[in-house]
Image (cartoon, rainbow, N blue to C red; front, side, top):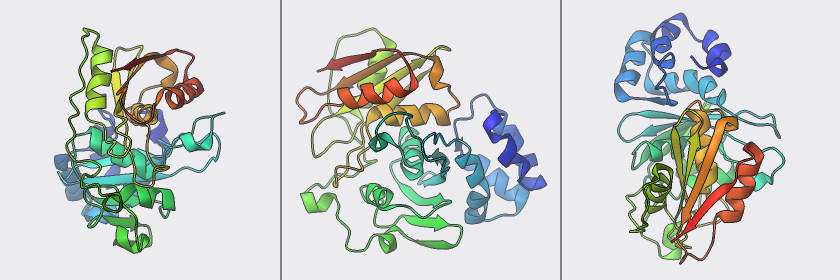
Amino acid sequence: MHPRFAKPFSNLSTELQDALAPILNQDSFQARLTPDQVATLKLATGMEDRALRLALLPLAAACSVAPISNFYVGAIASGQSGAWYFGANMEFAGQGLFHSIHAEQSAISNAWLGGETGISEITVNYTPCGHCRQFMNELTTAKVIKVTLPDDHSPLQAFLPHSFGPADLQITDALMSHQEHGLTLTSEDPLTLAALAAANRSYAPYSRGFAGVALEFANGRIIEGRYAENAAFNPSLPPMQMACTHAVLAGEDLATLRRAVLVESKDGLISQVDSARSALKAVSGIALETIAI
């Protein structure tokens, strides 16, 4: 079990500890619970979905990296497949606050990278800020997604009346829908190919600035991040930040990074290079490798 889970785990009920320990002790645990694992936890505890997710929120919050605010937020996104995905806020020490990743964004990104095409419910330990409400309004399931708090359970639209979204900019696509942009390059480098694949699955209907990042760690593991654009622009989530939060959720130490590659479309209206370098600088001294195609 990752050390960060020790304290919140000790506060769980005995029944939940007993059922959860084999899952958390797996080396393959990536802050995700499969439908079968969710069913096992429910059977062992007798808890319903929402109560169980609320009980697990402290584990998600334990993944938070908050050197600036010291405010730790956890979230759990329920994918349409029935799987659950942890998320936590992440800040980059010494860098602009606009680099920060909110817990809801982290959990949704975890689900998107896990193959989900929609979120049915998001559970969070603090009321979603306007930034997160706008981010969620970009999702394929924005009109039906529910938000669960310790003291409330309401549709997202109740938190975001008179909302602004993709349709207002004549965009019929949505975040988490299937994306394939046809970007190609010739390479035998696995890290470059991972960044290319991420760029091809990125979501950027407004700028067409398709971009992906791939991070390689000292243990050889590769973690990717995709650009996730938003109709309100500012809540857009850059690929480097997504890759970093995904790596943290997966239990990797960003201090052990040995390579980082950004692949982006040269025909887009924006570039991720400066943002990616700035975020990378906060967690590692390695140079960013960039490819525009």
